[in-house]
Every structure is written in C-alpha cells, then in structure tokens.
Image 1: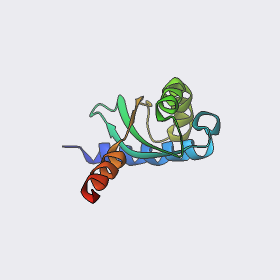
Image 2: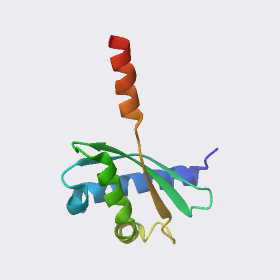
Image 3: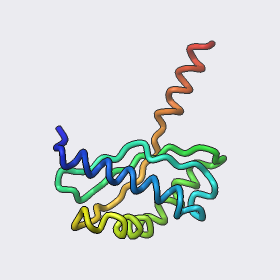
Length: 112
C-alpha cells in the first residue's frame, strides 16, 4: 500500500521526467518518442523505478542503453527541477514498459 506522499512524489517525478525527455534530451532520445508511463518510489524515497514506453525507434534496446548511460545527467536535471520539493533526489532505475507491445500481440492473436 502506497502512502499519499509516495503517490504525490511519483506523480511529480513522472511529470518532471516527461518534461526532461521531451525538451532537454534530444541527443539521447535521437528523435524517438519517449513516454514515462509509470514511476514507482520505494517507501524510504531512495529509489525510483521509471517505466518508459519507446516509439518511433528502430532499435529500442540501443535507446534504453543510451538512456541508462545518461542516468546521472538525467538525475542532475531532475534535481535542479525538484530541489524545492525533495531534499534528496532518488536513485533512478529505467525499465522498458512493454505493456503496449503485449496488448498489440494479444490483439493480433485475437484477429487471427
């Protein structure tokens, strides 16, 4: 069960990370569309698991590696944006959200 504080921080991180990916990380995302679908924060607020949905890219694995490689830069940009709301910026773990691919797969199976 997540606390209200965790939920608020998750929403804050999701919003700010979405802005960062859209406006400031064009070099990393290589014009691919990166969407922050969900953020989970541990109860002690030390770790944030970020789930990303990747579109318009031929190689999702390479894009994820690029994002993971720039984690410290992303965390720094996030820290400047949320410095008045949180004392410590959580560690970031990026994961690919493959739920849309799963839905498309089920949909294609049902059409057959």
